[in-house]
Image (cartoon, rainbow over all chains, first blue to last red; front, side, top):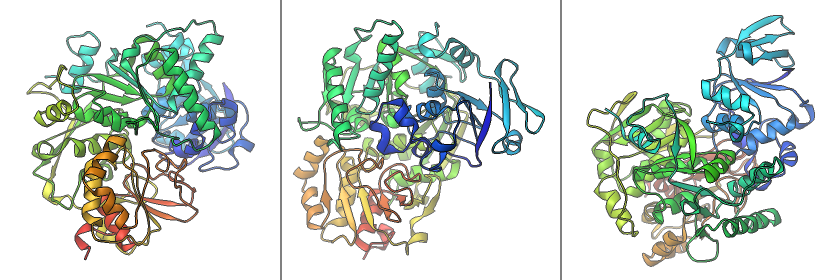
Length: 160
Length: 424
Protein backbone atom coordinates (compact mmCIF):
# COMPACT_ATOMS: atom_id res chain seq x y z
CA UNK A 1 0.00 0.00 0.00
CA UNK A 2 1.65 3.20 -1.23
CA UNK A 3 0.53 6.78 -0.95
CA UNK A 4 1.35 10.27 0.20
CA UNK A 5 0.71 11.90 3.54
CA UNK A 6 -1.75 14.56 4.56
CA UNK A 7 -0.68 15.52 8.05
CA UNK A 8 -2.68 17.15 10.83
CA UNK A 9 -0.19 17.78 13.60
CA UNK A 10 -2.68 17.76 16.43
CA UNK A 11 -4.39 15.51 18.97
CA UNK A 12 -8.10 14.88 19.48
CA UNK A 13 -9.27 15.29 15.88
CA UNK A 14 -12.94 14.70 16.59
CA UNK A 15 -15.74 13.39 14.41
CA UNK A 16 -17.39 16.82 14.38
CA UNK A 17 -14.49 18.17 12.35
CA UNK A 18 -14.00 14.98 10.29
CA UNK A 19 -17.63 15.12 9.20
CA UNK A 20 -19.72 17.97 10.67
CA UNK A 21 -23.13 17.28 12.25
CA UNK A 22 -25.35 18.91 9.62
CA UNK A 23 -24.29 16.21 7.11
CA UNK A 24 -25.35 13.30 9.32
CA UNK A 25 -28.62 13.13 7.44
CA UNK A 26 -26.73 12.24 4.25
CA UNK A 27 -26.18 8.56 3.44
CA UNK A 28 -24.80 8.95 -0.09
CA UNK A 29 -21.17 8.01 0.54
CA UNK A 30 -19.73 10.04 -2.35
CA UNK A 31 -21.64 13.10 -1.20
CA UNK A 32 -20.27 12.65 2.34
CA UNK A 33 -16.75 12.55 0.91
CA UNK A 34 -17.16 16.12 -0.34
CA UNK A 35 -17.42 17.30 3.27
CA UNK A 36 -14.61 15.25 4.80
CA UNK A 37 -12.39 17.18 7.25
CA UNK A 38 -14.43 20.31 6.57
CA UNK A 39 -14.23 21.32 10.24
CA UNK A 40 -10.46 21.90 10.10
CA UNK A 41 -9.49 21.83 6.45
CA UNK A 42 -11.80 23.33 3.84
CA UNK A 43 -9.39 22.31 1.08
CA UNK A 44 -9.14 18.64 2.01
CA UNK A 45 -11.60 17.52 -0.64
CA UNK A 46 -9.57 19.31 -3.34
CA UNK A 47 -6.14 18.08 -2.32
CA UNK A 48 -6.81 14.45 -1.34
CA UNK A 49 -5.83 11.77 -3.88
CA UNK A 50 -6.85 8.13 -4.01
CA UNK A 51 -4.46 6.09 -1.86
CA UNK A 52 -3.44 8.95 0.45
CA UNK A 53 -2.82 8.51 4.16
CA UNK A 54 -3.74 10.82 7.03
CA UNK A 55 -1.20 11.20 9.83
CA UNK A 56 -2.29 12.65 13.17
CA UNK A 57 -1.66 12.60 16.91
CA UNK A 58 -3.52 11.12 19.87
CA UNK A 59 -7.20 10.15 20.12
CA UNK A 60 -8.07 10.45 16.43
CA UNK A 61 -11.81 10.22 15.80
CA UNK A 62 -13.01 11.04 19.29
CA UNK A 63 -16.59 12.14 19.78
CA UNK A 64 -19.64 10.72 18.12
CA UNK A 65 -20.32 7.20 16.84
CA UNK A 66 -21.02 8.49 13.32
CA UNK A 67 -19.75 5.98 10.81
CA UNK A 68 -20.03 8.87 8.39
CA UNK A 69 -16.54 9.89 9.58
CA UNK A 70 -14.55 6.86 8.32
CA UNK A 71 -16.92 6.63 5.33
CA UNK A 72 -16.23 10.23 4.29
CA UNK A 73 -12.48 9.65 4.56
CA UNK A 74 -12.65 6.31 2.75
CA UNK A 75 -14.71 7.65 -0.14
CA UNK A 76 -12.29 10.58 -0.38
CA UNK A 77 -9.62 8.02 -1.18
CA UNK A 78 -7.92 7.68 2.21
CA UNK A 79 -6.63 4.14 2.65
CA UNK A 80 -5.25 4.42 6.18
CA UNK A 81 -5.08 6.80 9.09
CA UNK A 82 -1.81 6.66 11.02
CA UNK A 83 -2.26 8.06 14.51
CA UNK A 84 -0.66 7.80 17.93
CA UNK A 85 -4.00 6.52 19.23
CA UNK A 86 -7.63 6.21 18.14
CA UNK A 87 -10.98 6.74 19.82
CA UNK A 88 -12.70 3.38 20.17
CA UNK A 89 -15.81 3.80 18.02
CA UNK A 90 -13.93 5.35 15.10
CA UNK A 91 -11.46 2.46 15.30
CA UNK A 92 -14.06 -0.27 15.21
CA UNK A 93 -16.14 1.51 12.57
CA UNK A 94 -13.08 1.75 10.33
CA UNK A 95 -12.32 -1.96 10.76
CA UNK A 96 -15.79 -3.53 10.97
CA UNK A 97 -17.05 -1.58 7.97
CA UNK A 98 -13.73 -2.17 6.11
CA UNK A 99 -13.46 1.52 5.29
CA UNK A 100 -9.80 2.17 6.06
CA UNK A 101 -6.95 0.88 8.18
CA UNK A 102 -6.46 2.54 11.59
CA UNK A 103 -2.73 2.20 12.16
CA UNK A 104 -1.18 3.04 15.51
CA UNK A 105 2.27 4.59 15.43
CA UNK A 106 4.52 5.87 18.19
CA UNK A 107 5.13 9.54 19.01
CA UNK A 108 8.54 9.58 17.30
CA UNK A 109 7.17 8.23 14.04
CA UNK A 110 4.27 10.68 14.19
CA UNK A 111 6.67 13.59 14.64
CA UNK A 112 9.00 12.41 11.90
CA UNK A 113 6.48 11.92 9.10
CA UNK A 114 5.84 15.16 7.20
CA UNK A 115 3.11 16.44 4.93
CA UNK A 116 3.64 15.09 1.42
CA UNK A 117 5.97 12.21 2.43
CA UNK A 118 5.57 9.09 0.30
CA UNK A 119 4.90 6.03 2.46
CA UNK A 120 4.72 2.35 1.73
CA UNK A 121 2.89 0.34 4.37
CA UNK A 122 3.31 -3.40 4.73
CA UNK A 123 0.92 -4.54 7.43
CA UNK A 124 2.09 -8.16 7.14
CA UNK A 125 5.51 -7.01 8.39
CA UNK A 126 4.12 -4.24 10.64
CA UNK A 127 6.36 -1.87 8.71
CA UNK A 128 5.99 1.64 7.37
CA UNK A 129 8.62 2.75 4.84
CA UNK A 130 9.09 6.47 4.40
CA UNK A 131 10.30 6.57 0.78
CA UNK A 132 10.84 10.34 0.87
CA UNK A 133 13.02 10.22 3.99
CA UNK A 134 14.47 6.76 3.32
CA UNK A 135 13.51 5.43 6.74
CA UNK A 136 11.53 2.51 8.10
CA UNK A 137 9.25 2.63 11.13
CA UNK A 138 7.34 0.00 13.06
CA UNK A 139 3.57 0.15 13.32
CA UNK A 140 1.80 -1.35 16.31
CA UNK A 141 0.57 -4.79 15.23
CA UNK A 142 -3.20 -5.20 14.93
CA UNK A 143 -4.74 -7.16 17.82
CA UNK A 144 -5.58 -10.72 16.76
CA UNK A 145 -9.32 -10.29 16.17
CA UNK A 146 -8.82 -6.94 14.40
CA UNK A 147 -6.27 -8.54 12.07
CA UNK A 148 -8.74 -11.30 11.25
CA UNK A 149 -11.61 -8.90 10.57
CA UNK A 150 -9.38 -6.80 8.32
CA UNK A 151 -8.21 -9.90 6.47
CA UNK A 152 -11.82 -11.03 6.00
CA UNK A 153 -12.80 -7.63 4.56
CA UNK A 154 -15.01 -6.44 7.40
CA UNK A 155 -17.11 -7.86 10.21
CA UNK A 156 -19.85 -9.27 7.97
CA UNK A 157 -17.30 -11.40 6.12
CA UNK A 158 -15.62 -12.61 9.28
CA UNK A 159 -16.66 -16.00 10.62
CA UNK A 160 -16.10 -16.24 14.38
CA UNK B 1 -13.28 -10.94 42.15
CA UNK B 2 -15.18 -9.73 39.07
CA UNK B 3 -16.61 -6.24 38.84
CA UNK B 4 -20.12 -5.57 37.50
CA UNK B 5 -19.00 -4.97 33.90
CA UNK B 6 -16.97 -8.18 33.79
CA UNK B 7 -19.87 -10.14 35.28
CA UNK B 8 -22.38 -8.78 32.76
CA UNK B 9 -20.06 -9.52 29.83
CA UNK B 10 -19.27 -13.00 31.18
CA UNK B 11 -22.95 -13.83 31.52
CA UNK B 12 -23.73 -12.41 28.07
CA UNK B 13 -20.99 -14.45 26.43
CA UNK B 14 -21.75 -17.70 28.23
CA UNK B 15 -18.58 -17.78 30.28
CA UNK B 16 -17.96 -18.20 33.99
CA UNK B 17 -15.43 -15.43 34.03
CA UNK B 18 -13.75 -12.84 31.83
CA UNK B 19 -10.71 -10.61 32.33
CA UNK B 20 -9.79 -7.24 30.84
CA UNK B 21 -8.51 -7.57 27.24
CA UNK B 22 -10.40 -10.84 26.61
CA UNK B 23 -12.34 -10.58 23.36
CA UNK B 24 -15.90 -11.89 23.67
CA UNK B 25 -18.91 -12.13 21.41
CA UNK B 26 -21.63 -10.94 23.77
CA UNK B 27 -25.33 -11.60 23.29
CA UNK B 28 -27.13 -8.29 23.13
CA UNK B 29 -30.38 -7.73 25.06
CA UNK B 30 -31.45 -4.38 23.57
CA UNK B 31 -30.58 -2.44 20.43
CA UNK B 32 -31.48 1.15 19.60
CA UNK B 33 -31.44 2.93 16.26
CA UNK B 34 -32.42 6.51 15.53
CA UNK B 35 -32.98 8.73 12.52
CA UNK B 36 -29.24 8.97 11.80
CA UNK B 37 -28.08 5.41 12.52
CA UNK B 38 -31.28 3.82 11.16
CA UNK B 39 -30.83 4.99 7.56
CA UNK B 40 -27.14 4.09 8.00
CA UNK B 41 -28.14 0.53 8.91
CA UNK B 42 -30.40 0.38 5.86
CA UNK B 43 -27.48 1.43 3.65
CA UNK B 44 -25.47 -1.47 5.13
CA UNK B 45 -28.38 -3.85 4.45
CA UNK B 46 -28.50 -2.62 0.84
CA UNK B 47 -24.78 -3.22 0.39
CA UNK B 48 -25.11 -6.74 1.82
CA UNK B 49 -28.03 -7.50 -0.49
CA UNK B 50 -25.96 -6.38 -3.48
CA UNK B 51 -23.39 -8.95 -2.34
CA UNK B 52 -26.04 -11.65 -2.39
CA UNK B 53 -26.90 -11.75 1.31
CA UNK B 54 -30.58 -12.43 1.95
CA UNK B 55 -32.05 -10.17 4.61
CA UNK B 56 -35.74 -10.55 5.36
CA UNK B 57 -35.82 -10.64 9.13
CA UNK B 58 -34.00 -9.39 12.19
CA UNK B 59 -32.49 -11.68 14.80
CA UNK B 60 -35.14 -10.55 17.31
CA UNK B 61 -37.31 -7.50 16.60
CA UNK B 62 -38.55 -7.55 20.23
CA UNK B 63 -35.10 -6.43 21.36
CA UNK B 64 -35.04 -3.46 19.01
CA UNK B 65 -36.45 0.00 19.57
CA UNK B 66 -36.41 3.13 17.49
CA UNK B 67 -36.16 6.86 18.27
CA UNK B 68 -36.56 9.99 16.17
CA UNK B 69 -34.37 12.66 17.68
CA UNK B 70 -31.52 14.17 15.66
CA UNK B 71 -33.36 15.86 12.83
CA UNK B 72 -36.89 16.23 14.23
CA UNK B 73 -38.94 18.25 13.66
CA UNK B 74 -37.75 17.53 10.12
CA UNK B 75 -35.00 20.04 9.39
CA UNK B 76 -35.37 19.75 5.62
CA UNK B 77 -36.41 17.38 2.85
CA UNK B 78 -33.61 14.87 3.41
CA UNK B 79 -34.27 14.55 7.12
CA UNK B 80 -38.01 14.24 6.48
CA UNK B 81 -37.22 11.41 4.08
CA UNK B 82 -35.00 9.71 6.68
CA UNK B 83 -37.95 9.54 9.07
CA UNK B 84 -40.03 7.97 6.30
CA UNK B 85 -37.24 5.38 5.81
CA UNK B 86 -37.13 4.71 9.55
CA UNK B 87 -40.90 4.23 9.69
CA UNK B 88 -40.75 1.80 6.80
CA UNK B 89 -37.91 -0.04 8.54
CA UNK B 90 -39.93 -0.60 11.74
CA UNK B 91 -42.89 -1.76 9.64
CA UNK B 92 -40.87 -4.10 7.42
CA UNK B 93 -39.15 -5.83 10.32
CA UNK B 94 -42.00 -5.89 12.85
CA UNK B 95 -40.45 -3.60 15.47
CA UNK B 96 -43.12 -2.60 18.00
CA UNK B 97 -41.40 0.20 19.87
CA UNK B 98 -40.94 3.26 17.68
CA UNK B 99 -41.26 6.60 19.46
CA UNK B 100 -42.57 8.91 16.79
CA UNK B 101 -42.32 12.68 16.78
CA UNK B 102 -45.79 14.20 17.08
CA UNK B 103 -47.43 11.02 18.39
CA UNK B 104 -47.31 11.19 22.18
CA UNK B 105 -44.12 10.13 23.87
CA UNK B 106 -40.95 10.72 21.92
CA UNK B 107 -37.62 12.31 22.68
CA UNK B 108 -33.87 11.88 22.67
CA UNK B 109 -33.01 8.18 22.47
CA UNK B 110 -30.85 8.11 25.62
CA UNK B 111 -33.56 9.84 27.61
CA UNK B 112 -36.19 7.35 26.41
CA UNK B 113 -33.87 4.48 27.35
CA UNK B 114 -34.45 5.32 31.02
CA UNK B 115 -37.74 7.27 30.94
CA UNK B 116 -39.44 4.33 29.23
CA UNK B 117 -37.35 1.66 31.02
CA UNK B 118 -36.29 0.33 27.64
CA UNK B 119 -33.09 -1.03 29.18
CA UNK B 120 -32.85 -2.91 32.47
CA UNK B 121 -30.15 -3.74 35.02
CA UNK B 122 -27.79 -6.53 34.02
CA UNK B 123 -28.50 -6.19 30.30
CA UNK B 124 -26.11 -5.66 27.41
CA UNK B 125 -27.39 -2.66 25.49
CA UNK B 126 -25.98 -1.17 22.30
CA UNK B 127 -27.12 1.80 20.28
CA UNK B 128 -26.11 3.59 17.14
CA UNK B 129 -25.04 6.65 19.08
CA UNK B 130 -21.99 7.42 21.17
CA UNK B 131 -23.92 8.55 24.24
CA UNK B 132 -25.52 5.12 24.59
CA UNK B 133 -23.22 4.93 27.65
CA UNK B 134 -25.88 6.98 29.48
CA UNK B 135 -28.03 3.99 30.35
CA UNK B 136 -25.19 2.35 32.30
CA UNK B 137 -26.47 4.34 35.29
CA UNK B 138 -29.22 1.72 35.59
CA UNK B 139 -26.63 -1.06 36.04
CA UNK B 140 -26.50 -2.22 32.42
CA UNK B 141 -23.49 -2.57 30.12
CA UNK B 142 -24.32 0.15 27.59
CA UNK B 143 -22.05 1.10 24.69
CA UNK B 144 -22.30 3.10 21.49
CA UNK B 145 -21.54 1.58 18.09
CA UNK B 146 -21.45 2.66 14.47
CA UNK B 147 -24.12 1.52 12.05
CA UNK B 148 -22.23 -1.45 10.55
CA UNK B 149 -21.90 -2.89 14.05
CA UNK B 150 -25.55 -2.11 14.82
CA UNK B 151 -26.57 -3.81 11.57
CA UNK B 152 -24.51 -6.83 12.62
CA UNK B 153 -26.28 -6.95 16.00
CA UNK B 154 -29.69 -6.60 14.37
CA UNK B 155 -28.97 -9.62 12.16
CA UNK B 156 -26.90 -11.77 14.53
CA UNK B 157 -27.99 -10.79 18.04
CA UNK B 158 -24.40 -10.42 19.25
CA UNK B 159 -21.26 -8.36 18.77
CA UNK B 160 -17.60 -8.46 19.77
CA UNK B 161 -16.23 -6.51 22.68
CA UNK B 162 -12.83 -6.36 24.21
CA UNK B 163 -13.51 -6.65 27.95
CA UNK B 164 -12.58 -3.21 29.27
CA UNK B 165 -10.51 -2.32 32.28
CA UNK B 166 -12.55 -0.40 34.83
CA UNK B 167 -11.64 2.94 36.35
CA UNK B 168 -13.51 3.43 39.62
CA UNK B 169 -14.54 6.96 40.64
CA UNK B 170 -15.55 7.25 44.26
CA UNK B 171 -17.44 10.30 45.44
CA UNK B 172 -17.30 10.75 49.20
CA UNK B 173 -20.14 12.78 50.69
CA UNK B 174 -23.08 14.61 49.21
CA UNK B 175 -22.62 17.28 46.52
CA UNK B 176 -23.31 20.82 47.77
CA UNK B 177 -26.61 22.30 46.57
CA UNK B 178 -24.91 24.67 44.10
CA UNK B 179 -23.01 21.81 42.42
CA UNK B 180 -24.48 19.17 40.14
CA UNK B 181 -23.42 15.86 38.63
CA UNK B 182 -22.33 17.86 35.55
CA UNK B 183 -19.78 19.75 37.64
CA UNK B 184 -18.43 16.46 39.03
CA UNK B 185 -18.07 14.73 35.67
CA UNK B 186 -16.54 17.82 33.99
CA UNK B 187 -14.06 17.99 36.87
CA UNK B 188 -13.17 14.32 36.22
CA UNK B 189 -12.78 14.88 32.45
CA UNK B 190 -10.61 17.90 33.19
CA UNK B 191 -8.46 15.68 35.40
CA UNK B 192 -8.11 12.62 33.13
CA UNK B 193 -8.56 14.19 29.67
CA UNK B 194 -10.72 13.29 26.68
CA UNK B 195 -8.86 10.01 26.22
CA UNK B 196 -8.28 9.39 29.92
CA UNK B 197 -10.71 6.47 29.89
CA UNK B 198 -10.20 5.38 26.28
CA UNK B 199 -11.37 1.79 25.74
CA UNK B 200 -12.19 1.55 29.45
CA UNK B 201 -15.26 1.55 31.66
CA UNK B 202 -15.85 4.35 34.15
CA UNK B 203 -17.69 3.10 37.21
CA UNK B 204 -19.05 5.47 39.85
CA UNK B 205 -19.67 4.68 43.49
CA UNK B 206 -19.32 5.88 47.05
CA UNK B 207 -21.67 7.68 49.41
CA UNK B 208 -22.00 10.63 47.04
CA UNK B 209 -23.42 8.35 44.35
CA UNK B 210 -25.76 6.60 46.80
CA UNK B 211 -27.09 10.04 47.77
CA UNK B 212 -27.44 11.10 44.15
CA UNK B 213 -30.72 10.73 42.24
CA UNK B 214 -30.96 8.38 39.27
CA UNK B 215 -31.32 11.32 36.84
CA UNK B 216 -28.15 12.96 38.14
CA UNK B 217 -26.29 9.64 37.88
CA UNK B 218 -27.34 9.51 34.22
CA UNK B 219 -25.45 12.77 33.65
CA UNK B 220 -22.27 11.07 34.88
CA UNK B 221 -22.55 8.00 32.66
CA UNK B 222 -23.65 10.09 29.67
CA UNK B 223 -20.46 12.13 29.83
CA UNK B 224 -18.12 9.12 30.15
CA UNK B 225 -18.15 9.18 26.35
CA UNK B 226 -16.33 12.50 26.55
CA UNK B 227 -13.45 10.83 28.39
CA UNK B 228 -13.25 8.24 25.62
CA UNK B 229 -14.85 5.48 27.70
CA UNK B 230 -16.44 2.39 26.20
CA UNK B 231 -19.11 2.49 28.89
CA UNK B 232 -20.06 4.06 32.18
CA UNK B 233 -21.75 2.10 34.93
CA UNK B 234 -23.21 2.36 38.42
CA UNK B 235 -24.32 -0.61 40.51
CA UNK B 236 -28.11 -0.67 40.80
CA UNK B 237 -29.62 0.12 44.21
CA UNK B 238 -33.05 0.80 45.71
CA UNK B 239 -33.22 4.18 43.93
CA UNK B 240 -32.83 2.45 40.57
CA UNK B 241 -35.41 -0.20 41.52
CA UNK B 242 -37.89 2.50 42.55
CA UNK B 243 -37.18 4.53 39.41
CA UNK B 244 -37.84 1.51 37.21
CA UNK B 245 -40.88 0.36 39.21
CA UNK B 246 -42.44 3.81 38.66
CA UNK B 247 -42.06 3.03 34.98
CA UNK B 248 -43.59 -0.42 35.22
CA UNK B 249 -40.38 -2.47 35.11
CA UNK B 250 -39.84 -4.94 37.94
CA UNK B 251 -38.70 -8.10 36.18
CA UNK B 252 -34.95 -8.16 35.60
CA UNK B 253 -31.77 -9.84 36.82
CA UNK B 254 -29.50 -7.38 38.57
CA UNK B 255 -25.78 -7.93 38.44
CA UNK B 256 -23.41 -6.75 41.15
CA UNK B 257 -19.65 -6.86 41.37
CA UNK B 258 -17.98 -9.18 43.84
CA UNK B 259 -16.96 -7.62 47.18
CA UNK B 260 -13.33 -8.02 46.13
CA UNK B 261 -13.87 -6.76 42.57
CA UNK B 262 -10.77 -5.50 40.81
CA UNK B 263 -10.36 -2.06 39.26
CA UNK B 264 -7.49 -0.83 37.13
CA UNK B 265 -7.42 2.39 39.13
CA UNK B 266 -9.49 4.11 41.80
CA UNK B 267 -9.96 7.86 42.03
CA UNK B 268 -11.46 9.51 45.11
CA UNK B 269 -13.24 12.86 45.24
CA UNK B 270 -14.51 14.81 48.21
CA UNK B 271 -18.01 16.04 47.32
CA UNK B 272 -17.68 19.19 49.40
CA UNK B 273 -14.84 20.33 47.12
CA UNK B 274 -16.86 20.08 43.90
CA UNK B 275 -17.85 23.54 42.71
CA UNK B 276 -19.52 24.98 39.61
CA UNK B 277 -17.25 24.62 36.60
CA UNK B 278 -17.42 25.10 32.83
CA UNK B 279 -15.58 23.38 29.98
CA UNK B 280 -14.17 26.07 27.70
CA UNK B 281 -14.04 25.81 23.91
CA UNK B 282 -13.03 23.56 22.21
CA UNK B 283 -12.85 20.50 24.39
CA UNK B 284 -14.75 18.98 27.32
CA UNK B 285 -11.39 18.59 29.10
CA UNK B 286 -10.79 22.35 29.08
CA UNK B 287 -12.28 22.78 32.53
CA UNK B 288 -12.19 25.94 34.66
CA UNK B 289 -13.98 27.03 37.79
CA UNK B 290 -16.96 29.13 36.67
CA UNK B 291 -16.01 32.02 38.94
CA UNK B 292 -12.66 32.41 37.16
CA UNK B 293 -14.48 33.20 33.92
CA UNK B 294 -17.18 35.43 35.33
CA UNK B 295 -16.47 38.30 32.93
CA UNK B 296 -17.04 36.16 29.81
CA UNK B 297 -19.91 37.68 27.78
CA UNK B 298 -22.42 35.32 26.17
CA UNK B 299 -24.92 35.44 23.31
CA UNK B 300 -26.98 32.43 24.17
CA UNK B 301 -27.86 29.90 26.87
CA UNK B 302 -29.02 26.44 25.86
CA UNK B 303 -30.67 24.03 28.28
CA UNK B 304 -31.28 20.86 26.33
CA UNK B 305 -29.98 17.42 25.30
CA UNK B 306 -29.78 13.94 26.82
CA UNK B 307 -27.30 15.09 29.41
CA UNK B 308 -28.85 18.43 30.33
CA UNK B 309 -32.65 18.48 29.95
CA UNK B 310 -33.94 15.76 32.23
CA UNK B 311 -36.64 16.76 34.71
CA UNK B 312 -34.15 17.57 37.47
CA UNK B 313 -32.09 19.66 35.06
CA UNK B 314 -35.20 21.69 34.27
CA UNK B 315 -36.04 21.98 37.98
CA UNK B 316 -32.53 23.29 38.65
CA UNK B 317 -32.82 25.86 35.86
CA UNK B 318 -36.27 26.90 37.06
CA UNK B 319 -34.98 27.38 40.61
CA UNK B 320 -32.65 30.05 39.22
CA UNK B 321 -35.00 31.57 36.66
CA UNK B 322 -38.04 31.91 38.92
CA UNK B 323 -38.93 35.58 39.18
CA UNK B 324 -35.96 36.61 37.02
CA UNK B 325 -35.58 37.60 33.37
CA UNK B 326 -33.00 36.37 30.90
CA UNK B 327 -30.54 38.84 29.42
CA UNK B 328 -29.51 36.68 26.45
CA UNK B 329 -31.26 34.38 23.98
CA UNK B 330 -32.20 31.33 26.04
CA UNK B 331 -33.76 28.05 25.00
CA UNK B 332 -35.07 25.17 27.08
CA UNK B 333 -35.78 21.94 25.22
CA UNK B 334 -36.98 19.13 27.51
CA UNK B 335 -35.33 15.86 26.49
CA UNK B 336 -38.57 13.89 26.13
CA UNK B 337 -42.29 14.58 25.96
CA UNK B 338 -42.88 12.86 29.32
CA UNK B 339 -40.41 15.31 30.87
CA UNK B 340 -42.02 18.23 29.05
CA UNK B 341 -45.39 17.22 30.52
CA UNK B 342 -44.05 16.83 34.06
CA UNK B 343 -42.32 20.21 33.75
CA UNK B 344 -45.64 21.72 32.67
CA UNK B 345 -47.54 20.07 35.53
CA UNK B 346 -44.97 21.36 38.03
CA UNK B 347 -45.21 24.91 36.68
CA UNK B 348 -41.65 24.96 35.32
CA UNK B 349 -42.68 25.85 31.78
CA UNK B 350 -44.52 28.92 33.09
CA UNK B 351 -41.42 29.95 35.04
CA UNK B 352 -39.34 29.68 31.87
CA UNK B 353 -41.79 31.63 29.76
CA UNK B 354 -42.19 34.31 32.41
CA UNK B 355 -38.39 34.66 32.34
CA UNK B 356 -38.50 35.23 28.58
CA UNK B 357 -37.11 31.79 27.65
CA UNK B 358 -38.08 30.03 24.42
CA UNK B 359 -39.33 26.53 25.20
CA UNK B 360 -38.98 24.06 22.35
CA UNK B 361 -39.63 20.42 21.49
CA UNK B 362 -37.28 17.54 22.35
CA UNK B 363 -34.54 17.24 19.71
CA UNK B 364 -30.79 16.75 19.37
CA UNK B 365 -30.95 19.58 16.80
CA UNK B 366 -28.77 22.39 18.10
CA UNK B 367 -26.60 20.19 20.35
CA UNK B 368 -25.03 18.67 17.26
CA UNK B 369 -25.20 21.89 15.24
CA UNK B 370 -27.73 20.40 12.86
CA UNK B 371 -30.77 22.71 13.11
CA UNK B 372 -33.24 24.32 15.54
CA UNK B 373 -31.08 27.22 16.71
CA UNK B 374 -27.47 26.85 15.61
CA UNK B 375 -24.81 29.45 16.42
CA UNK B 376 -23.55 32.19 14.12
CA UNK B 377 -19.87 33.00 13.55
CA UNK B 378 -18.24 34.31 16.74
CA UNK B 379 -21.34 33.69 18.85
CA UNK B 380 -20.72 32.39 22.36
CA UNK B 381 -23.06 29.93 24.03
CA UNK B 382 -23.29 28.39 27.47
CA UNK B 383 -24.85 24.99 27.16
CA UNK B 384 -25.91 22.02 29.27
CA UNK B 385 -24.92 19.67 26.42
CA UNK B 386 -21.94 17.34 26.29
CA UNK B 387 -19.57 18.52 23.54
CA UNK B 388 -17.94 21.77 22.49
CA UNK B 389 -15.67 20.80 19.60
CA UNK B 390 -15.16 23.35 16.78
CA UNK B 391 -18.45 23.80 14.94
CA UNK B 392 -20.30 21.45 17.26
CA UNK B 393 -23.26 23.80 17.83
CA UNK B 394 -23.10 25.79 14.61
CA UNK B 395 -20.48 27.91 12.87
CA UNK B 396 -16.96 26.55 13.14
CA UNK B 397 -15.93 29.89 14.69
CA UNK B 398 -18.70 29.87 17.30
CA UNK B 399 -17.83 28.96 20.88
CA UNK B 400 -19.56 26.73 23.41
CA UNK B 401 -18.98 26.54 27.16
CA UNK B 402 -20.36 23.37 28.76
CA UNK B 403 -21.98 23.76 32.15
CA UNK B 404 -24.59 22.50 34.58
CA UNK B 405 -28.20 23.73 34.27
CA UNK B 406 -27.64 25.86 37.40
CA UNK B 407 -24.66 27.63 35.82
CA UNK B 408 -26.36 27.93 32.42
CA UNK B 409 -29.49 29.46 33.97
CA UNK B 410 -27.52 31.84 36.19
CA UNK B 411 -25.50 32.90 33.15
CA UNK B 412 -28.70 33.44 31.14
CA UNK B 413 -29.82 35.93 33.81
CA UNK B 414 -26.60 37.98 33.79
CA UNK B 415 -25.48 37.48 30.18
CA UNK B 416 -22.05 36.41 31.45
CA UNK B 417 -20.68 33.17 32.82
CA UNK B 418 -22.03 33.11 36.36
CA UNK B 419 -21.63 30.86 39.37
CA UNK B 420 -25.16 30.37 40.79
CA UNK B 421 -23.83 31.39 44.23
CA UNK B 422 -23.03 34.84 42.87
CA UNK B 423 -26.48 35.61 41.53
CA UNK B 424 -28.11 38.50 43.37
